[in-house]
Length: 196
Image (cartoon, rainbow, N blue to C red; front, side, top):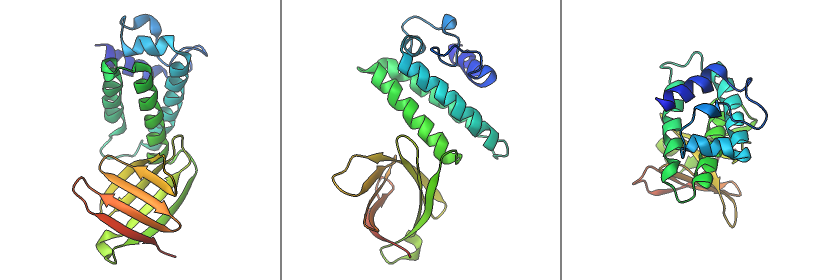
């Protein structure tokens, strides 16, 4: 099982034994034509893999009291998703995007980079629609928005004005202390004002 072996190398051996140009895993064990081979052959992807190994190790330290322990299982799932990039027309771009997003996600979820907030927003004059947002200085920039007992990680998107973020089924578009927020796949857009 190549994925299991890679995960063992990724978690168990980390990045200390890898040379400066190689990823965090052993390249002599990868299958020809695999995403792992692409990473081994691309210096930029290898650098992202080493960076993710460092961020993952830091997140593991912070996740030691996590109940239930989810980080290792989610990382295995992420590796499986990364390895699906072989189906992409732009394999290098797919892998690069996934690495950048995973690094930013771990940095935010485990508070490994500086943050701004929390910032509180009142939405549609209804207490149940209040949103709490924390912005993180990751690359790409992300935020974590909380509404009730739900949270959403959102990535910064290009916009003509203000700051626009997009999550799986949520969006947050802020401009001068006001925000338009959509929560959930069928959610209506809410008008939110920053609380002072």
